[in-house]
Amino acid sequence: MADVIIVDNKYITIKFLPDKKMIHHTVHQPISGQNLRDALTAGFNALQHYGVSKWLSDDRKNGPMSDEDRDWGAENINRRSLEAGWKYWALVVPQALVAAGSMVPTIEAMFDLGLRMMVFSTVEEAFEWLDQFDD
Figure 1: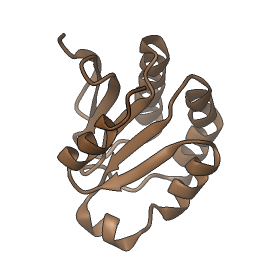
Figure 2: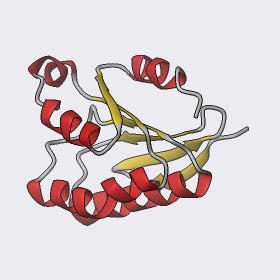
Figure 3: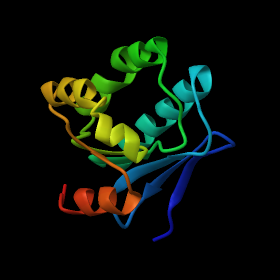
Figure 4: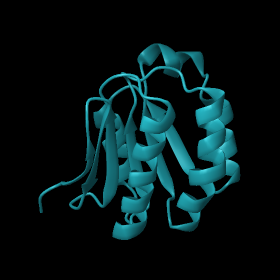
């Protein structure tokens, strides 16, 4: 079955991958503010619509997330996504960020909400990790 394009613009592409039963986004250049919020809302709506539990985020070309965007996500997306069935998140970031361990607080916070999250430096590793989950 063909991938379903949810969002496709100069900042980000979000797809539903029916064969893998997941949402997959790729950031093309740094995205923030209303552009990010609109994209994440569309992704959440797709996650809910298609009833999937996995999301792969390829953020290697993204910049740092502002406190405002992080707070908005915590208030408007995170809990609602988990309630809608989100269980597994594979986040792909530059290798230097993986080595720095700067995602540990986010991983711990999301784990406390019931989400399993892993950080990777390649999309292939992220797909491999998500593929082990059937639901």
